Length: 178
Ligand SMILES: CC(C)(COP(=O)(O)OP(=O)(O)OC[C@H]1O[C@@H](n2cnc3c(N)ncnc32)[C@H](O)[C@@H]1OP(=O)(O)O)[C@@H](O)C(=O)NCCC(=O)NCCS
Image 1: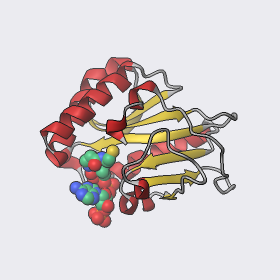
Image 2: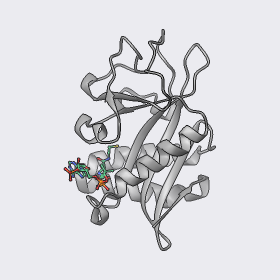
Image 3: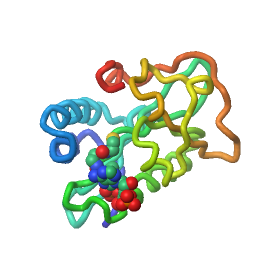
């Protein structure tokens, strides 16, 4: 198994992975929704505002994760982790956690200070994420599940309160994802 940085030329394999995985776990409608999101995100990968890492077994992609920039009024290096998927038949073997930790470490090496995600608090608490109040950091759009708003500092500092609503990358700028 190996990890690598992915670029736009991986759009098709990454889109297929997310479409299959989310169709299997959440049904066809969600599979299509996340597949479309990933198709758009992967067509815009620039390894700066939109970063993607993949896990490969031999030459087959079995996992992928996106990190996208959150823009605040003040200069900060804050990214959002979403979405992430591991091929259905390879789930629950530790591959997802290894991929997420790989991504967090890569971003730490790029001087990113805070990672935010929006998901299952039980799963992400195993990876160092804690519930994040919107009094500390607001979400770009209105959250339908505020308890899923989670954050982690990649430095020694605790997450500071930051004024103002951040801007997410265009691809996430749709209430359907929030
Ligand atoms: C979530 C996901 C990325 C985790 O990857 P993974 O390789 O299966 O996870 P790991 O083996 O590293 O970690 C196992 C933990 O993941 C969680 N998990 C994995 N699959 C799960 C499922 N189907 N339901 C609930 N929790 C699940 C559990 O907390 C599990 O720990 P446990 O077995 O002790 O309960 C993967 O299961 C997946 O792609 N799921 C479908 C898509 C999805 O939900 N993505 C996350 C939201 S963007």
